[in-house]
Length: 151
Image 1 (tube, one colour):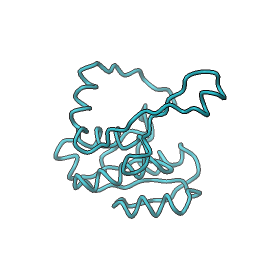
Image 2 (tube, rainbow, N blue to C red; image 1 turned 45 degrees about the horizontal axis):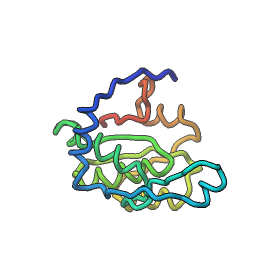
Image 3 (cartoon, rainbow, N blue to C red; image 1 turned 30 degrees about the vertical axis):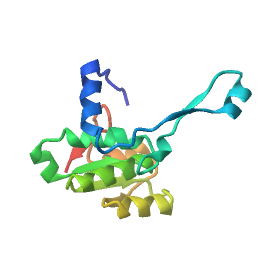
Image 4 (cartoon, one colour; image 1 turned 90 degrees about the vertical axis):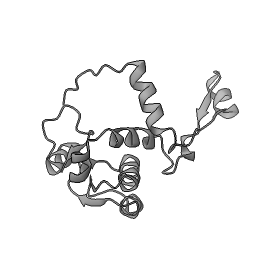
C-alpha cells in the first residue's frame, strides 16, 4: 500500500512535546558498553522501556489521541496492532475517556491481548495479515492504515 509523504515541521514536534510532556516519562540515554564493543562504534540506548507500557509507542499514541476533536473522542477510535501500539492506544484512550477498539491478528500472544483489554480497549481478533485487519477495522484504502479511524 503506497504511503504519502507527510511534512512535519519543528513547530509540529514542539507542539507534540508540549501535549505529551505531563504524561510521558522523560527517559534517559545510556551508553551500552557491550554493543559499543561488539559494533566498534559508540552506541547509546534510549530507555523507552521505562514508559508505562514499556514502549516508545506511548508518545505517538498520546499525541494522536490528544488531537482528536470532541466529536471524534465521543465516537471512539479503532486501530490495528499486534502489541505495543495496541497497549499504548488502550492506555491513553482510557485515560482520555475515549472508547477504543483494537483489531489484532488471531495469532497475537495471549499476554498482549490480555494487557490491551486490561488497559481498557475492546479487542477484536481477525485475520493474520495487515490487509485482513484493515478490512475488519474499516480503514481499507487509507494511505496509512495504522492511523486512527473514527468508529
